[in-house]
Image (cartoon, rainbow, N blue to C red; front, top):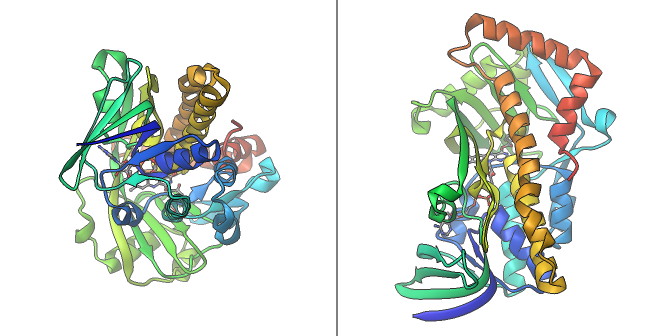
Length: 392
Ligand code: RFL
Ligand code: PHB
C-alpha cells in the first residue's frame, strides 16, 4: 500500500481537472490528479472547439495561454443557414466581443505539458478509484496503480471526473437533485484535414436535419450532421457523410465544401443535465461531473473552465486567507451560470434541429423564429451575448 498526502485530490484529467490543477499551482496549493485513462487516451478524444474570452482569461491566469493566443482563430461572428441562405450574426458589432476557435485537444495538451514541466503529479491509469470521508474532516481517495493499492489523504476532493465518473455517484441519493432532458437524436461528427468551407462557423437548420460546419485550424475541419440515435458511426461511409452534409447547406456553400478522408468519426448523444448542489462537505463537483449541455451552444468546455476558476479561487481563499466564503458560495455561483448556459443550449438546440414529434407546425415556427432572430437587432444580440459568454 502506498500512502500519500495532498491538499487537493483532483479526480479526472479532463479540462476541469487539469485547469484546476494549474490554477492551484499558481497559488502554491498542492494537488494530485488521479485519472483512470492514459494521457494518450484523454488526448485522443475529439470534443469542443470554441473558447469564450472568460476561458482564455483563465488559461492566461494559469500560465498556459501562449499557444492558444498565437494559434487560436479569432471569430467575430457565426452564420445561420436556413431557407437556402446564410445570415451572419456579428458578435463584435452586437457585443464588442469575439470567441476563439482552439480545440479541446490542444487545451488539454497545453495543460498536460505545463503540468509535466512543473513536475506536478498526475496518476494516469488509476483503477478502481474510490472516494471516502468527504462528509468529515479527512477525505481519502483510494485507487490501484500497476496492481499496487494507493491511499491519498487530502483536505478537499475535486470531482472533475465527467458525466460517467464516480464522484457524483458516491454522493448519497437523498443529498442530490438531478434534472435531465435527453434529445431524440445525436450528432455524427467528422474531423478531416481539409480547409474549412467558410472563415466562420455555419449552424444550419434544414428539413433533413441540423448541420454544423466548424473547424480546428485553417487546414482542419470539423463537421457535424444531426443523426438518428440508432445510427452507428462505422455504418456511415465518408462519402455518405459528405453527401448528407452538402444536402443540408445552401447550394453555393455545398459546392465549396472540400471533402477528404475522415481522421475521426463518432456519434455523440445530446443531453441536458444538472446536479444540485455542487458541493457535499469537502467534495466539490466541477464540469461535466455536475452538468451537461447539448453541444449546439459550445458551452460544455467553457462551463467546466468557469467551475475550475471559481473552485480555485475558493480553495485559495481557504488555504491562504483562511476564509471559507468562496467555498461556501461555490455551488450557488456555478449553478447560476450553469442554468443560463443550460437555457441557451436548450433554446439553440430546439431552434436548429428537426424534432420528430414537432411536425410541420414546429418547422414553420422555427422558420418564423429564425427570420425574426436575424431581422431583429435585439434578438440577434441575445444570441450573440450568450454565445460569446455571459459575464461572470
Ligand atoms: P471530461 O472531459 O469528461 O473529463 C473527465 C475526466 O475524468 C476521467 N474519469 C475518471 N478519472 C478517475 N476515476 C474515475 N472513476 C473517472 N471517471 C472518469 C475521464 O477519463 C476524463 O479524463 O470532463 P470535464 O473536464 O468536466 O470537461 C468537460 C468537457 O470535456 C465537455 O463539457 C465538452 O467536451 C463537451 N463537449 C463539447 N463542449 C463544447 O463546449 N463544445 C463542443 O463542441 C463539444 N463537443 C462535447 C463534445 C462532449 C462530447 N462527449 C462527452 C462525448 C463532443 C462530445 C463527443
Ligand atoms: C466543434 O468545433 O466541435 C464545435 C463547435 C461549435 C459547437 C459545437 C462543436 O457549437
